[in-house]
View (cartoon, helix red, strand yellow):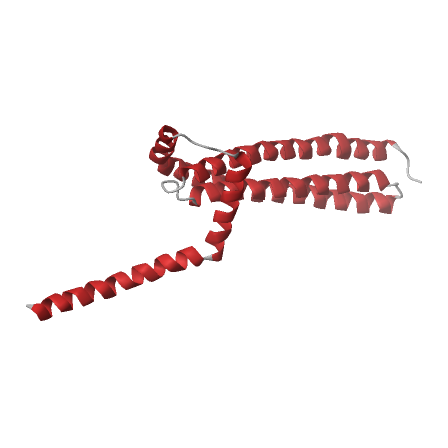
Length: 193
């Protein structure tokens, strides 16, 4: 009987060993450590203190919210790619127009400046998309049952990044309307030199 008990204990010990090793690997994962670092920075910036009742509310609702956050992250990544493709097509067309206008003898300096502004606004928009996706990712990957304050801080950060994203999108649209369009009209209204 004693041999069977020792044998069963050994089997359970070897079965539990890989679980312990995987848990240790997860804690030393550099990506996980980076996420935890960003979350702790957000918590310190927001100085967020939740009451026990608020913590319980966050703990009960966080799993469903994390699923929605993952969906938002996927959609934001898709929209980022689509927006970048769309803007790159516009820039390529502008390059072709500049070449054709130069060949025809037009002065394209204002159009080139407008194109540089559009490129700058597009870069700012892509950075805003990336910051928003990172904030969503951190909130979705956070262990919200263990750290409800970190989850709440990441959620607030993602809301702030979304507002910045909307502003960057409006800036790009404004640059297209207020810089690029008038530059094209100005060039076409002037005769070649």
